[in-house]
Image (cartoon, rainbow, N blue to C red; front, side):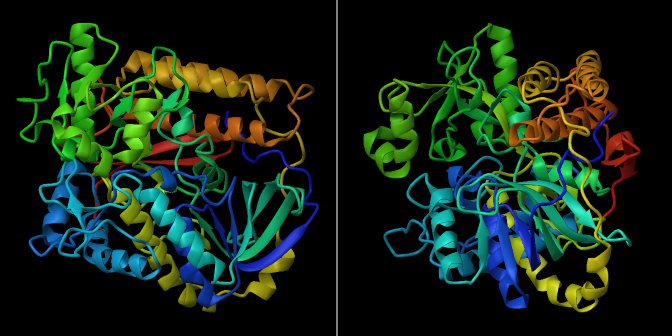
Length: 553
């Protein structure tokens, strides 16, 4: 019982453009910049331009930039982390185009940390067998990338609308994307619900971490792009693979909302995971110990917590010394000290928390979704690069590379578009009050997902999650008279319910443990039955999830 369309009054204003880009992280900003030569571009973002997940990225961006590295090695590490489900063709695109894409990012003004010889300083993170992570400001890579791209945007004649929550896709009579509806909340801008008519729509809305109670994602990461795509009839894939970052600062039982991340690069520089007795429990669990892929480390932490009854594990970086902490990790050092912990003199309490969605809106190698005219890039997309588990620092690179690929495909796609003939048939959004759940449902959705669909999953727990989510949807469907006033909080809660339901549906079907999907009742990987993808669609008010055997493009 998932809402087909969000509640939205008839548009009170309309804007016309060639391309509308939704989202302002690395994927959205690069897409807007690279698409601008091909027509008028309007970038809309839910809050401020720098409020998304990119600015929070600490570790860096992975690419084979070193003389002793090679894209083939980056390919091998990515495939290993993806546990048999990566699309090798997509990964090959990522690792071969990645180095030059990073150099173009530098040409746009991004300033990465440098080694004494002037070359780009590189570090190592979990799952990488080479030092190939370029970083900026020690541990403020995302903030620097966001700064550089926003500065470049000012000179690119790209129109920007901030505080604009995307609602639904507008489609023409043939089913092709023709724009989006938005709820604009900022002062001095077209207010209320309006429509952007566009020849092409690029979703770069980021992640869905707010589905869970504790996450590294900012408050804006409510799965809006995935929910919109589902309601528009697009395919989404691999949603069961939600990556939990192993080392998030533990703030005590009951912590909610965005949690401070302790970058994987801290382990890359030599910090160790230990239990309360000081034992390095990752030794023997994987040949790379603390630098194993994230799913392995997160599981190792959860197992040790369960074995010892401890509420957290410890990340011990005291031996790195004050100078390393101050030079390489100034942001993390300040954050920890703000919470009363000094990593120079004491271990950091850490736990896993929801971090990254490896799945999303299914695309081809040029960001095209199953809905003509609708593109997706960045965390909202499922390009096939990540498989069952994202390799550390591949996310910024994926957003960069595939945003550029959308721009490369756009001229040919737009040349075949009869835009003048399509505009007259644009449908209107759903009537006000239809399909929304109340803002208070957000907390209940997060409680259900954290309890039953987090790091540890079972058939019984996932069934309980499905019942709880169905109950919330049924209550919203019954209570037409008491339907919430259309507002951003209600739309976000509805998106969270839609995405949570899709995650649970896929997680119930995949009866194995693979990558970031851990079924305690099916603890082994099963390549014979499950080396493929779960694809979800929304039709006639209900979700349908089917299994497709693994193929490559």
